[in-house]
Length: 257
Image 1 (cartoon, rainbow, N blue to C red):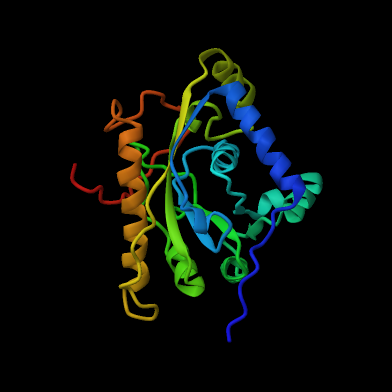
Image 2 (cartoon, rainbow, N blue to C red):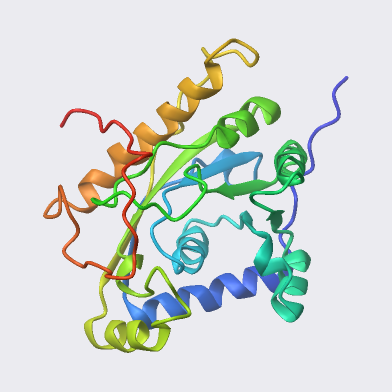
């Protein structure tokens, strides 16, 4: 008889930090959260897959998840964990370290799979970086998110966001004060939408190309959910960050319409 999974419980510190994130986003912009996370999935096991457009994204997503009663563990770059105080706080909150470009990067996927299998909600960025697409549409994703879903058997909920790029520039902390000051005055609308779980059950781990097809479905779902958030900016964003480099080498096919 299988032993029921006991969902991971977010530390009080992390739940308090989400409240502070909600306050910070409310100070710098106007947060609009739409869609929902199905009640049975809110406490895990679950993978949240979000597009990545700004260094401010973790704060925005922490606030949006708080609005939907979700306390995710975030897969974050190893550089944050090496920061003396912040690193300790992130470890205490249960977040998962990703050392990109090193031989230990695969350990992050194993740790995330164990976390999800143990009943956690894990938030990932399938693109693997802040996107550099000229139109700020989701780039072709890395297959790690799909492999995480296959390894854990958890549902994947796409999360589309728009507006956080108007708060912090790509090269933050360079330009941080200017970006914050502008946001305090303009208070941009920051939108987050939780979509329907992505259908992946017909794909089988180990089958050639399965991870790639699953990844494309996840990116397609994020793109579909992002389009209604930026109806007046279908091709290029109105707010252009001059410090953001452009890269079309990882452009993803956008669904028609």
